[in-house]
Image (cartoon, rainbow, N blue to C red; front, side, top):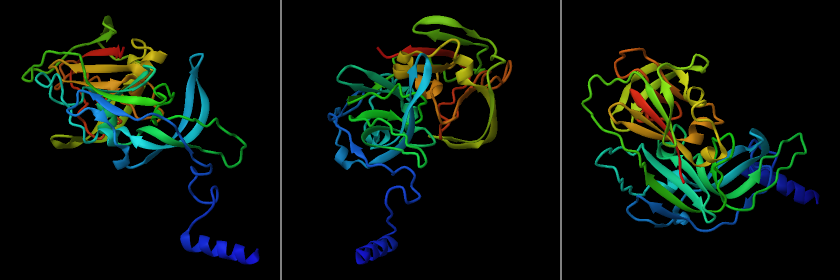
Length: 337
């Protein structure tokens, strides 16, 4: 036995291996469980719809602290590490065929809908997957292990089936179980486009929820939290735009009264931010209202007559500035049927 222990110690020394809980990786203290689920297909506004070949994809990992809504409040479920295939990797080589390309060519108004056989749907924005500072945060999980605290006897229930995991969500409303289809959709919302509009300006923002006007913003609420973000502006197409300090109000605080959360909106809702010249982008409802990473969208008030519009949107979670909509004139809150 002594010789065996000596050999094991030598092996650990030479390889750097340590048992679970005895190294500096605090997310591998429990055995991983393989999740059962069906195959995936890609559908919608793409050139080649069909099955997803996950054998060619890398396995990504995310760690999450999961909560669900109970009586309108988040209730902790457990902490997990999920391994799986990110939507970034799954959709990276897909050729998109935009239905509204003649009106609006940029892809920042696309939606991605993840659906299971029961018809449950979760909505993500294209920008949430491809424009963010941190990629691979939304994945189809195929393996899970609980993150076990080292000084407590807490044990979380272990999931058994595949699921969509959006790692930056505070409440896991978009965690569709056993997804079977990923659909790329062109935004159905049309706006008149005038790229030569001068001055580019809108004095107020029209707020519309499910086709009904909910009011107009002629100023930003005083109670909305103010944020200051130093930023290096970098566009997907034109590159470097300068270094500046963005000062604005939390878009979540500004819009919460007009677009209050519901379980359906958290799972399948999205917003369309449109400018006076027809420029627009989509943002998933949970992407704006349900974040756990403290990265926020901001709405600025630059004052009356400001060059570039009074109320611009700043996409704080994004690497690229393309979802920065100038001269906001309308915000629509919609839900996928």
